[in-house]
Length: 197
Image 1 (cartoon, one colour):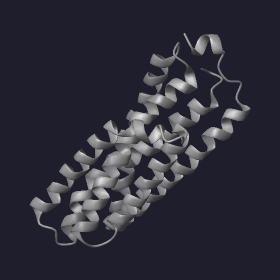
Image 2 (cartoon, one colour; image 1 turned 90 degrees about the vertical axis):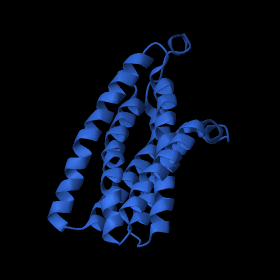
Image 3 (cartoon, helix red, strand yellow; image 1 turned 180 degrees about the horizontal axis):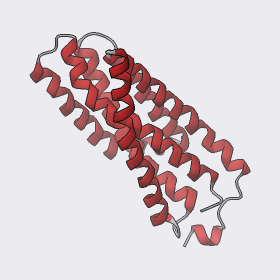
Image 4 (cartoon, one colour; image 1 turned 90 degrees about the horizontal axis):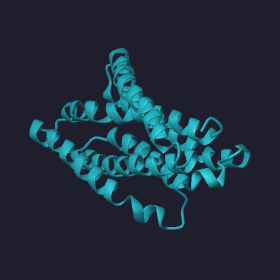
């Protein structure tokens, strides 16, 4: 596991992704209210986000089965979350609803596929430790993401600025995901006997 550069990068991606993952719903409802969306309609965006996440978590298997590697599907998911964050900067409830569903759907798929990637990077023998370490980075992202987003809001007094920052975070994650196949060429890899046990 110490030789898996892809696992190390995957942990860094999880940290960065989760910074945005927690901040998105935290600032979504206030953003909706600033453009005149009624409080009840603004709250319904969280339901749309949750429904999208449930469908994305359940529907990730077909995405991997389309002869696209899990690394590329993860990059696509991270890129789509960036697009969803960018869509939130548009005025109108319909844009926010579509953005909420897209964000929920691809986030649900992203986290489910991350477990698949962890197993392929560290093997079955180190899978439990790998998931545990990955969750440390996920938790750290959960802690620092809202703080950074709140600091940006305090500095700019603009929810749009927060979502531009989140867009940049998710696009950066997508670019990092594209490095995963390249790292496979230079890392020593797993011993086949160990990885299949």
